[in-house]
Image (cartoon, rainbow, N blue to C red; front, side):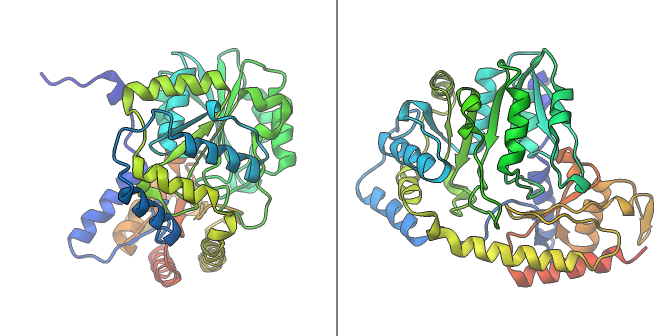
Length: 396
């Protein structure tokens, strides 16, 4: 008798990776599928970062790395936090991991106990709730909608807090909605949390540089929240380094030490060559990647214009990241080309099968009326993809 653990049986499959796998299946059948499901920049890693990696190979960096990262990288991370975020961390407060996903998992594993509650403003990145489940805690969703630009209010936050609340996760710029919380909005949320000193905050800032005008504000700069905020970041999105797998946290030292202990028993230190390349990435001024951000902004404007021509879609105007998150509930209860549409899962699957465009249902992000469309693709691909979607949705 083959029995898997309750732990793995309770864990959902990543919706984004599942949709990407379905798209690959169609591609293997010779179908021209345009993939707008994954959050992966389509740019090459900048040359100066690649040169740093090549130099590291030439310099024979090939040994195990310190569990929490090279000292030089942790210094560079501290300097980056000070320069870009106005947060003062010391190297003892920094842990480098194999991607920001591992950073988030480390934090949850070292802070959460069975029965603890984690507040997730929805929409949230798909893996947050899965990681909370792995840590044997409970996710508590705080809903929002396109009418509120996918932001929660201080009143909603207050209402969701119980004696079991241990952690709140914020993600700004947000995946999947592209929403950015302003300084004023974050300070208002912090004012609620100041009354609950036993609640910690994880703020995921992986998209901070992919920002189209709203100034990025880091939660840990609020003095009353610094000692209980964990700032998560990495190089995957802004530097087009998804496959290099480097993320990091800045945190209270006791939490950083616990993450180091956890990681020492799971993966040990992150890749040596990728770490040396990350030093070069973080030491460079953000202006070095401005060309990518400018192109993403043009794509954002293009895809909003094209989607705005499709009847029934509701859109907000994302201020960061590289996703649009349209509300598609107008199609629920309809039949498209003989296919009954009951929910966002049906919409995403229909678009894949009929338009051959891969998107992701918002249900996996805690927003069941929406689908996520990535515009980390060329403008020509975006035009073709949205044209196909428009045609497919017109067949009511």
